[in-house]
Length: 199
Ligand SMILES: N[C@@H](CCC(=O)N[C@@H](CS)C(=O)NCC(=O)O)C(=O)O
Image (cartoon, rainbow, N blue to C red; front, side, top):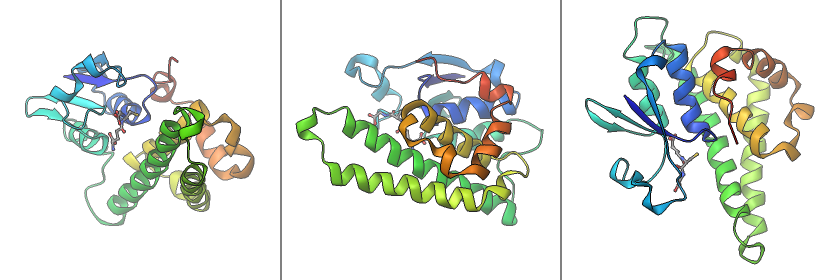
């Protein structure tokens, strides 16, 4: 299976960590894509022109929650998407929360690479508020993260990793000690180390 990705994409990282943790890593061929290059051909794989995209026997799959759930259906080990009940809905809520943090972070990033005269500070502040709101909720619920590995814990780790990559000024560890402690342990996993951004 081909995975269209970039090494800095936190959504693609979710997929790559999922592939490692489910033992499917060797079945995936990584195909780097530059999303800023209109000639990349990405839109032929995903009409939204976004990564990650996984080429499968069912055609291209996107976005990251769909790809991760597909990969989780291919192995017999402990499931990253719990089948039912509170375990399932908690994992999916954590995924939505951390994906939402990432969405806000990416919007800030897109805004901040525009020429300064086109940047709209109130919009950036609004998105920053979403990031901080998500971090507050994650800090309060950090005990939840200590449990089994799920798509929720993977997404939370990727979201915090993206703040480390692009939002160092935020210094999130200073205000969110429980999250910092949890993330430190998660960051020792080889799936996390092997998927660190190369840029
Ligand atoms: N909800 C999507 C978000 C994917 C996404 O926004 N990917 C970014 C890269 S980190 C992208 O391809 N951006 C290019 C664009 O928006 O044109 C997912 O979870 O896969």
